[in-house]
Picture 1 (cartoon, one colour):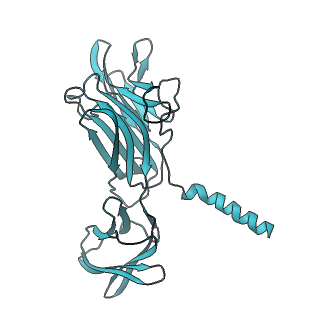
Picture 2 (cartoon, one colour):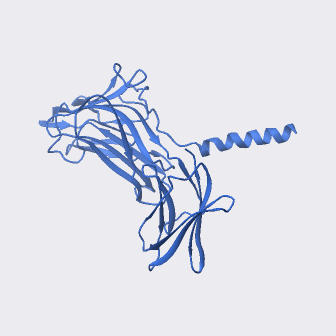
Picture 3 (cartoon, rainbow, N blue to C red):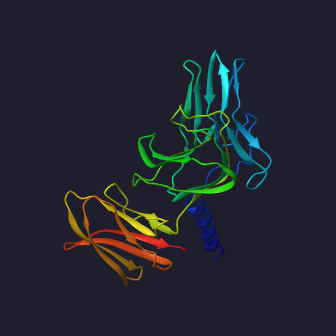
Length: 304
């Protein structure tokens, strides 16, 4: 009996890391390095001794949303090698790169990441100058920038003198599970040098990933068939690629085989939306079927 119990406990411990929803490292910006950047993040500070020493990212130790610290990003004008330019202030989960001749910079790479969150949430304050805008970039990839799984750029266009919550629904472009992630937080517009303004300042704290109330358990999940969930509209998103239009029934059963709902749709390579706001907590099975029988089947669970 003791041996069986020990085996059971060991299996549970081994499964916990696999089942846990992946979160972001140092997401409260409490830990900082000597290079004046938050641990696990890179920053657009530029240091090329003895010629260049740009500091545009700072550890803010007062007035954080929670905890002791937050990150402050302030774009600034600097002159180096006879050239004056505004350095946009940003941090990234990837790598910041910079070249002196010509003077240019950007971000690349990211962290290992394998989950599919529904949204990105953070708290921010913003002080803009002229037509500048802050930016939040989310990019998850499969392969080395081979397939973009989810990608969004959200612009912060208005001043926010006090802590403001920002929740960004993530748009998915592929049914694949990612293997890498990069997030970029910027005080200035990242892609339009004409509007980047000196002294535009963005504070960010408590950034996190939000996972929905529906868990999709994979039975068959590929480029031809996948099921996802829109947490904001309480809809299942069903995609089934066919070579021609197919009259298909989308049927939801309880786990014990009871018919819950049936919807007839014409599949023509467009994503179908099924409202499941009335479903109670539990396990369900979704099937796609035609007059010739069941085409595909997918199990999903609801936790509210």
